[in-house]
Length: 291
Image (cartoon, rainbow, N blue to C red; front, side):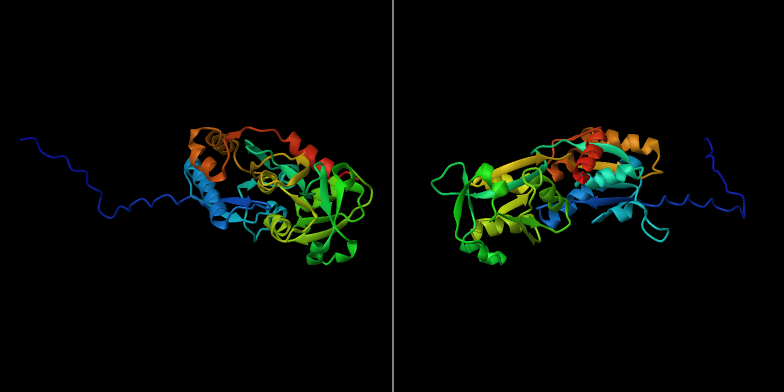
């Protein structure tokens, strides 16, 4: 009968300690003025974190409300490895700080900033401005409602811009785009969200000029509202922080642009990713800041 071979550990020999686990990677997430539910945005962020983690073989933690300040943290603050960013001006800022563009999402709906308005009943090609509904915005002194031709809106003295989130990209775009049509800015009223803009215009019949993104303007137009102008912007991006290894960046890019990203794509409502180009983001920021 063959004997069993038994490996014996010498008496007193130390058992090798397991290798320490690598620290989690950090993913920053900036959704801008997204109009989805918090749960939907959290699920999408987790799907991206899972994709990166599966690719890197490491756990990934994510944190919302990533800002320009987070891009260059102090020693005591969280250091990020990747960032998923929707506002293109923040993408441009990160690129200028040495971050690497990993990939850009494919745009399914025409990302940008839109001016929307109330149609004037019975007068195609005209929009409604002013009137008693404006009292909700504390601008009732503008006078009675009147119909204005679309090409005359930009110089109408009773035009009021209804804009979400003061200081946001949409707010900056409202000013930059309006000044391409006329030297004088109209009165601007800020509300918290894009949905508040269309909510006031739809439910309270406020005859202002709303400034929103296509996620909100498309349903508005589909229900009879007027689109005054659409200004395209570069779409969402995934970036890697300075110091992230080129090998890891290449692996994450391959994962995003391949079949492994299907779950994340579904959560983000996009058709996929592409390698992308930094130039449109930098050009957009230059245009936005032009005097």
